[in-house]
Amino acid sequence: MSNSFSKEERVAFEDILEGFQDQLVLSKNVSTYNTDGTMMARTGDVIWRPRPYILNSFDGQDQTTNFKTQTQLSVPATIGHSKSVPWTMDAKELRDALQEKRLGDSAKLRLASDINRAIMDVASGQGTLVVKRTTAATGFDDVAQCEAIFNEQGIPMNDRCIALSTRDYNGMASNLAGRQTLQGKPLTAYDRAYIGEVCSFDAFKLDYANRITAAAATGITIDTRTPAGNYYVPKATSIAPTGEQGNVDNRYQTVTLSAGTSIAVGDCFTVANCYAVHQITKQNTGQLKTFRIMSISGASAVISPPIISAQGGSTAELQYQNCVFTSTASSAALVWLNTVAASINPFWQKDALEILPSRYAVPTDAGANVMRGTTDNGFEIVMQKFYDINTMITKYRVDTLFGVVNKQPEMSGIMLFSQS
Image 1 (cartoon, rainbow, N blue to C red):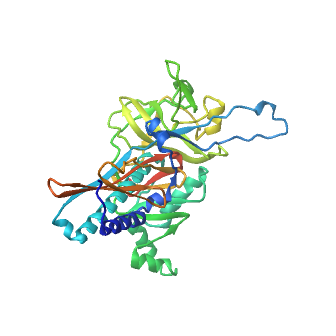
Image 2: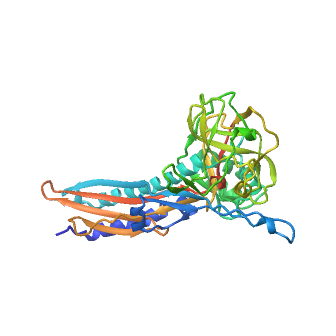
Image 3: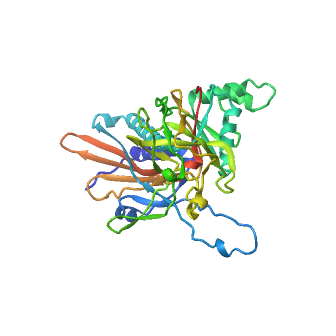
């Protein structure tokens, strides 16, 4: 016969679920995709999620030569985060229900933190729009640069978020609090260090933030001439040597650099004479395109986003072009943007980041008692209890299963302060 939860334990689980929902601040500001458990089990917990189409328009009535096939891009999303908080209580400890509640509170805080951290890791590590600031955080002017890079490249105007380290957030609040000529917000910034919405971005304060080290590489170049092949041609699928057809992850590209010495994963850079374009109109923004290092092996570097400069002239390149070269060279210089170690402040448009809540198929007739609950944004929380008669110890565990994916690295980025 399975163990039975006491009333106190049921109330404790309800409190865990309620508190869990309250703590999931960042996950409420990314999109959610609910998966089918059976399907995910059969596909190894991987599902390919489509990216938005970008289509071209043409002038004139006669469009005879413009009817061309379009390329659908997609990215792999994996349910790869399995988080659990286990603990035990013996028969004496169970006499004090307050201890149980405290453990439950700790469990919900830990799992909520794990989910928020997973989102921040993806946003910080895979965002490719880099805003470099040479001073400490001051306020509106900083976030305005994030808005500018979004607007120039055609990122949707709605649902924009930025998450700032505590020191950078408070630096902005300090600047706002000093503006005595304004009403309302300066007072809130002064007494609560709260800045709210700034320049179309909802701003959130992080009690932790990932950090980036200073780039150490020097003198690195890349051949940007067309024959060198360091440009990317998007494609929906590829054929393996054995004949199987599979999807292609178009978020990354392998390029050949002059050297790979001292280059680190996460480094941010621009390429000489490589300018970002508006994703829809393909108009040159006049701003250098920013890239990130995803991995490095010798002189071969995996970068994101790929260099889609339309140098090959294919329809897919014209459809998804993200940059243009005003001139090419055999040794175009890479200029590193992360010149000083600093906290990473990620910003994103809601549809760029996606969470995939999932569930465990925990049997309810195998001796342990099982309780389930689902948060507003789809996270399922499972609490289990099992009593060991030999030791009079009761085992508890609270679990959640989910995935996080950055579907569009060019709709997310990072801001770095105090760079040289």
